[in-house]
Image (cartoon, rainbow, N blue to C red; front, side, top):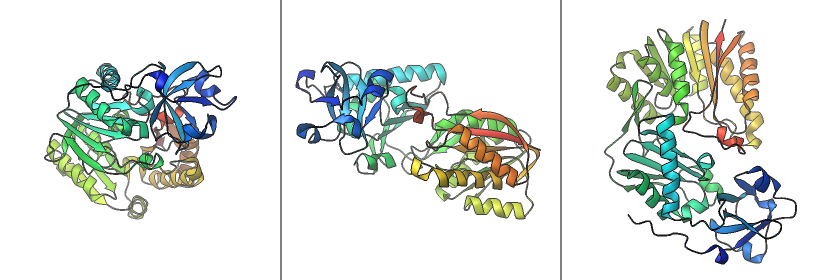
Length: 406
């Protein structure tokens, strides 16, 4: 596949973008990877630019300082692409970033199953790429990436030569950018779920129908910790998806695991993976509302050595924060009631709007309401294949806490 330029316009011919007076300091001086709509100085020509247009950013003295992308139809209006104002956003440019990300994962993770591109953390704002051996799932969640999709795929092919590529356009972030949803196979063939080796287990991921990109690589280190805590004991895996926590625990020697989720598709993958791993007899799955299931289990007197609650984002934005915090407190309360004395409660949050300290406070409050006391023994985040941009705390969205309860 050729690496023909997708953005061969010279910087002198590109649109010029400037910040409103005294509004661009965080971007220019602190290295933030994006800027908001009200920070940009718009004229008639700038407002008319198509979403995702590549432009040259100028400083207060009108000197070119960076190559950026502009979308005047969204609050995150400006994204940093390259500190070189002469950069060409073509296949070779993408290939260089994919290659650098691949080499970093080779050092940090090894193997061929990981998040290859974590958006701003890897210098590709709004882009997610998960690698499943010979297959890759791509999310182009920003207008600039959608506009340069051909070059992006060329660069991916040059750096990794994947046999299978799936475009997953189901992210809610695409709607914010004015982009349509969908999911399609653009290279190769898929005969069914793919195998994902991780933490001593083999998982099954459906790249065409599964949630997100088909798997949650971010929980890799937290799966490992939960498995360590559950060795020899019983685990309850709530909001289980396709069994990330429970199958890792069984592989590490847990006596049994019960997975609860609202998706039968996800649970079918977990059941098949349990059989594939040879511990199907120690695994059970129940399709149910998580809160209702925990309530019923408590009424039945069920207890577990480890209870893991990994819910969807209860607070995906600041507007939902108050309600989201209440939901995390409720989750901790119901989960704590199911933990054997001396056992462990693990609570996860993928809500960007929830700060780690707020999650700890809500978890502790929920446990107290349940009449439980204990101690925090583990604080985790996403794996090393999810690098955090130093000026964008939102890229460190995942928080995981484990408490031992008296």
